[in-house]
Structures are given as structure tokens and as C-alpha cells.
Amino acid sequence: MAIIDLVMPKMGESITEATVLKWHKQPGDHVAMDETMLEIATDKVDSEVPSTAAGVIKEILFKVDDVVPVGTIIARIDTGGASAAQSAPEPVAVVEAPKPTPVPQPVAEPQPVYQPAASAAAVATTGGNRFYSPLVLNIAAKEGIGMTELENIPGTGAEGRVSKKDILSYVANRKNGAPMTAPAATTQPQQPAAPVAAQPAAAPATAPQAEVNYGDNVEIIEMDRMRKLIAEHMVRSKATSAHVTSFTEADVTNIVKWRDKSKGEFQKKYNEKITFTPIFIEAIVNCIRKFPMINASVDGNRIIIKKDINIGMAAALPSGNLIVPVIKNADTKNLLGLTKDVNGLANAARTNKLKADDTQGGTFTLTNVGTFGSLMGTPVINQPQVAILAVGTIKKRPVVLETADGDVIAIRHMMYLSMSYDHRIVDGSLGASFLTAVANELEAFDVNRAV
Image 1 (cartoon, rainbow, N blue to C red):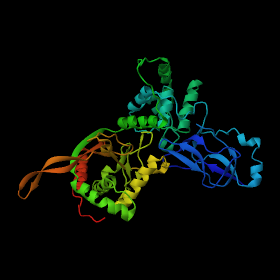
Image 2: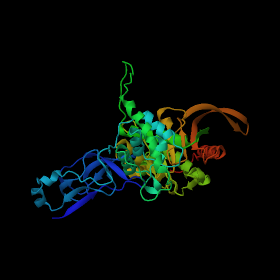
Image 3: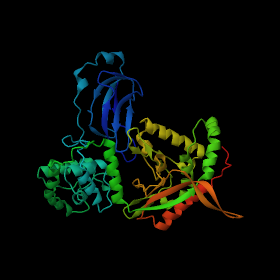
Image 4: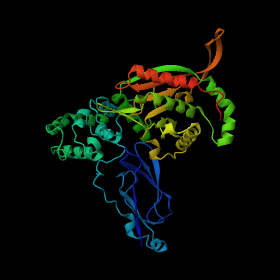
């Protein structure tokens, strides 16, 4: 009899844990190779975890809503075939999960009661360059831990980040009245005394007790898990980056004409529908090559210029929430390659089939607010990137054209572009120059381009 361990898979470079949403199999059930075992959720996307072996489920080690670190054994599969099936009813099938040390259960709710005011305040008052995951910020908000106090919690994560284990340990020590000590050596020896200021933090904990009267003619809807994460992400972005937005417009008549005459041939030749999005991404990539500082991130006082150009594109989920799947190495792909990636990721988003890795590693983001009829928008930067470009709806307008015979008024397809950028490293001259370059690239599109 062979027992195969099923572990929580690695789902991206920045994802260290996932929440169990639903088990599709139970102890004693048969499972085939690559058959879906369970659904999990990260702070990026929901995913399905397939079985890595065929056999009978012997043990399930975690319950729904448990938060499990990447690499942890979550189930065991007996590959002994029929003999394993006979022994399936063993009481071991309902083994209570051995709780790994990194997952303290008393307060390890992955979706703590959300307190928008407390959470937003915690993010907005950050004065340092430390990164906090949405889960850590949610726990801090729930426990009434302000940003000043959070900054003083020693971190054991990568680059000194505060992990979930760190903040839960801190909360447990504070409730027990034990002094908070740093693991090993801390960079600020005098800081551990600072958590004495945690006593006034008892005030926010009483806030939820006060009943708020919203009036009679209202409907109250609880945010779903993804909406909470989006809210945290947006607030943190505004608190992190100095947002500036520039605007321009582009005459995209050539693009509209080329697509109208070529879309039938394109689909027949490549079995792919051609939309405007891959054309926009192609123009953005060409301009990033000229302005590499746009393809960067900030780490403290360091500017990290990314050599890979990975373009995120905002896409709508069936729930109405937005997600940003990423086209990796967009600078290595032609229009057909970009089209295939755009269509594949958009379809995966619509059908809830995106993998966690599909949303990782973006270096610049495009959002099409024109899809919903907006002329323009002021998008929020997708951290840790430093810029995001929005394209509005394409409208026919009368515009003045310069010709050899003088100025004329013509009906053209016009589109507004807006770009929000991080003024910490992207000045107005760079931001405006890049945006203008994108507009010029779109206007220069060859209407006679071969399919």
C-alpha cells in the first residue's frame, strides 16, 4: 500500500498561504489523477487543486476556512487500489487536522469581520516603506492595532515583513499581558517597549458594539471576500503612491478601419477574434522600450527597473469584481501572440478558471474603462507598479485635420487616454511623454497592415 501526500501547491512568487474554500472529495472517495480535490483562495485569485495521484482519499488534514501555508500536506491518498477502497471506512478517515505551527487557530480566521474605518485608517497612516499583506492588515484592524504599533512588530518574513504568524503571536502575547520580544535580533532594540501604547487600542475594539442607524429604506450587503481584498488593495495603493493623472487623446481611425476590414480574415486564418486590447498592449510595449522607468517599482529608496515587460489587463469576473490577469513577456510576442493571450485570459476570468500564477508578476497595467461607456477615468495604481493606463470609449467626433490644402474638418474615431503614475519616481515630464508616445503610436497604426 503506497500513501501519497498531497501538498498545498506554490501559486506565485508572493503567495505563501491559501484558504480552503471547498473539498470536492471526502475520506473514502476515489480520486483520479488530475481530478479536482479542493478549491482554495489566495489574496489574488480562487483556484482548484488537482490530485497528484489516483487512489482513495485516506485523510483530509484541513477543514474549510483553514489557512494553510504553501508546501504543507493537506491530504493523503492511498494508491493501493481496490484494497484501499475496502479499508476506506477506517475511523482515521476523519482525522482532526494536526495544526501546523504557522497556523494558530484561535484567531486565524482568513476573513475577519471587516471594519472599513479601522482598516483604512491603518493603511492611510503608514509612514514607512514596509509592505503588509491584506490578511495582516485585516487582523490588525480587527484587533485595533494602529499603524504605529504595527510598524514596531518584529517581522520574520522575507525582508523583515510581518507575517500572519508574527501578528497572531503579537496579539496572543498582548492579550496575555506578556511583554513582546523580537525573534532573534531586531534592528530596533529599544522598540519592543513601544507596544505599551497598545492599551488605548482597546477603544476601536468597542466600536463595532455601537449600532449604526442606516435608516429604514436601505439594503445592507456584506462585502464578499474578493471585494474586501480589492478594497484593502485600493486603499493601500492610495496610501503608498503619490498619484498623479495625465490625459491625452488619440485619433484611432486607422485602427478602427483596419480591424473592421480584417477581423473576419483574422478569425478565419487564426481562429481568434481580434479586439482593440492587443493592439493597445502592442503600442504600450513599444513605448515602454523607450521609457523603461515606467516599467518599475519602488522599494524604500531604491528604484527597481523591470527588464521583463508583463502587462496586466483589468478583466471583469462573473461576480462583477475586477481582476488583473497578466500577459507575461509581452515584449516577445507579436499581435497574434498577444491576441491569443488576451482572449485566453479574458475567457478564463469569465469562467472562473484563472490560476493564481495568471495574476502574478505584472509590471504595468492597462484598464479599458471604455468597455462600460466611460470617456476617461483616473485609475488607481496596481501595486507595486508605478503606472496604470486607462483607455476610454471610442467616439466619432468632428476634428480639425491639417492637409496640404489647408485645415479641414473631418469625422474621426477619437479616444481619450489617461494614466495615473507614482510621482515618487515618475515626474510629470516622464509621465506625459510616455502617454503622448502611446497616443502617437496608436495614431501611426498602419491601416494597410497585413493580417
